[in-house]
Amino acid sequence: MEQMNDHQYFIQEAIKEAELAVITGDGEPFGCVIVRDGKIIVRAHNRLYIDYDPTAHAETVAIRLACKQEKSLILKDCIIYASAQPCPMCSTAISACGAKEVYYCVPGTQIQEAFSQITNFEELGLHPKQFLRREYPCTHIHNDEGLKVINSYFTSKKPK
Image 1 (cartoon, rainbow, N blue to C red):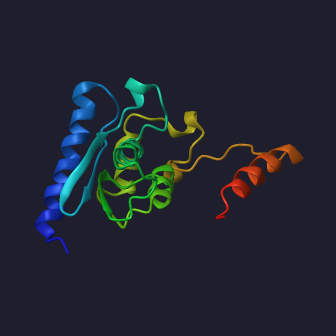
Image 2: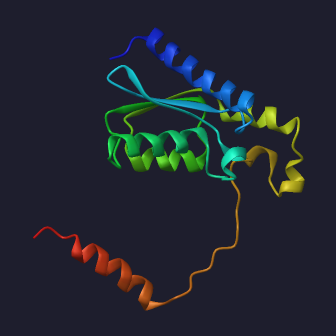
């Protein structure tokens, strides 16, 4: 088990990544490090502007890099340190990769307060208290071919 000062160290490293995102102009002020066995295996920061990618949040960038580096979709022995509380998209990615723990510095409510200084949430169609949640129309279109592709893939993956 890591000591509290280890957690502080890794959070500080995530904060350095957040600063780097701003200094380089790559993205917004969010950073992340992924740690295994007490060592940082990946450092990443928000890359929204440099990648023109709305999913290039610090956590998703870090997870992509770590999975590629480890040649695995699973990071079960890893701890994620984020400069801010992961958004719903990043939380889903964290769940998908199976990281064992997450530590963050700035709570979502404080991020909301900071963004409200520069963002008119009404213009974005967001309620200030739910700025991380955006609803959009989503309609099911039935087509058997879609399910055939999925079933074919998973049938071929069955143990022999």
